[in-house]
Image (cartoon, rainbow, N blue to C red; front, top):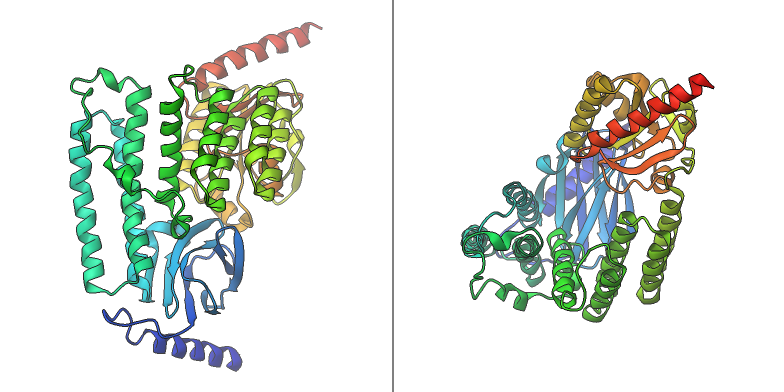
Length: 490
């Protein structure tokens, strides 16, 4: 006990020394070391994990007070990510930094606060991240229903406000060129992404019919001159990667549309898009990430095994990431197994009373609807349970089974379902979340798999919140009723 007290006192002494002159406007980095520490309120596990890109760097354990402090030597300056299951967030680390983080897992991003030397730039990044999310949601809710001129004027006004905050940051606190570039890019590329999103809606959603929508301001597309498609320092930045995805969707369409009619599910278009990424980007990490995303989306949306294989083969011919290649080969095989009339792959589940059971043991009604949720998406799981509770009353012949997909979350999962008074008989979690999620191809949160009483798949990719989901249930329920009557007569 005395040893731990002394150790904790030493940790606090070290970090206090490192932070005594924190964020002095003229302070330069004077050490090859980086200190990264903090406190996790309501921890889900007893550790956090630090990553650089896909590479795991360190597993850092919490002490009995849910605090941690880690001394790192020889770390390259740049963006890193830290994960505390099931959440993760970025942190910008440079030599000489002593960054402390405090967060509450119940409100991960919203509660995240940095202190210490190096905190200003990181607090700026999390502020930009949250503000970007708010403004982008507002745009989506309004469905971009503005003329190009009005849209540009509004975004210019918002951009000016962000630029003022950025200028205040760099004028008051001396940042390195790396930090300045990343901080500015964190909001700049988000605005670039909005222009790409607007263009997508304009071209594919009838925006051209809006009065005044035929004229784009001359400076609407000038942002493209500022884009660096191979920026090693930004390869982990959310706004940068989001922009690249939107850009290549639009750019592929613009260059392809004169050759063939556009459809995002077309084999030829997808292969054209893969080739455009391959010819535009030289940075292997950025390129392979984009190639992987494009191919994954095609395989998930496609219902034809032959065309999925054709796109997959083309991807394999230009991808250089062996891990991603194996992942997509596995995905293609899994989607091929999840076809109507096939038996759903059986999975091990944990019930609310702690017993291990099989997925196949749950199919007791003519139809079972399996939906999936994660503790990290509170807004989603609350909506999903409300929707399935409502549907179960309308369709009593359909069982709605909720399955939690989180790793190492049994205690928190039980607390969550009991706190919300969910039906414990219809709540389960995967015993092997990663394996089961891969086999059932759970790549989006709204996914529902419908099966009959024999475990045969009726629909492997229904959407719980789509406008046609209830119509599908009516149809499936009618078919189940007919089958039930036939069985009774036999």
